Length: 367
Ligand SMILES: Cc1cc2nc3c(=O)[nH]c(=O)nc-3n(C[C@H](O)[C@H](O)[C@H](O)COP(=O)(O)O)c2cc1C
Image 1 (cartoon, protein in one colour):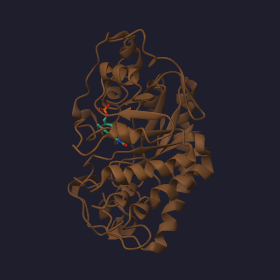
Image 2 (cartoon, protein in one colour):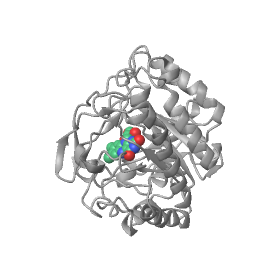
Image 3 (spheres, protein in one colour):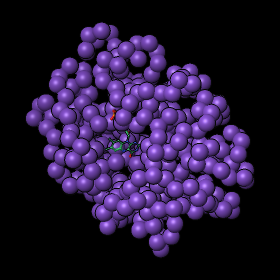
Image 4 (tube, helix red, strand yellow):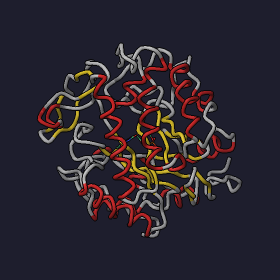
């Protein structure tokens, strides 16, 4: 298969629900930890996203839906008027450059530190089971804290946080939202029996463990309409927090996907494998078979290059492909992929922090 196979439709327009994309190349959500302490985007962030507006669709970096949702310093929020005004700059800039952008709605659950939480309280989770690893706080890297289990009576408040953030994202001019139910953050923690040991209606059976993701999706769909809401899942990644997989990946995520079908979402988006690490999946898991249970457009992600994207598109395994790391150093990634041009590689040191350096200073082919 030629690099820039002329027969591929990856570079032709498509639709995801109500979204009309110029091509099937999506920018995956990328946390870049370049916000101020209040998490309000400014002109620099608007420039960064506008530079990448030739993607068929941009999925924003994960965006905290509340103060309690935070697990990393210098990440953005979408729950105050300041957040709405800041993101408006970004969405205006992306639209002026001809692009589309949806907001990834994020609650980290247990993967947080008391320093990042309101009043220094414990992070919340389905069960009081600590994650592994460290997170970035205003005081440097810290071991994540022991979480406390949410009371059943607090769950409506969590759903309300999503609803409020979704409404803020709408006023900020986004084209839609992506429910972040991946990467072992709050919603994924509820899905997996490794992190969810509850005995109420949100724990135990598959029906119970999938309930929160479905209730959040319903709330967000009420705000946006079904065709501007997507969802991200990562059935087999241990990140974040080296989180054990669910003991029945095919059954749990299969049931979830069957239930998601009733919403007729704009898209479902998988991290295929271990996030930003490998495409290997356990022997008893078949992600293509899982995906096939979804009756709508599908975005594949994780370690794609153009050859894999062209091949999986030709095989009908994906409707669109999301690229993450390649978008960091190649703002004009779509053009480069199309022309078979060489890709710049962003060093890891540029991923997080450091202002404009390694962020908005990557040249395009045109210079
Ligand atoms: C620096 C960095 C930040 C990321 N931030 C997010 C994020 O905010 N939300 C999310 O769902 N995934 C996030 N991811 C995962 C990416 O969206 C993507 O799944 C991963 O990088 C694999 O795609 P790639 O091989 O094209 O980079 C991040 C990955 C990296 C490397």
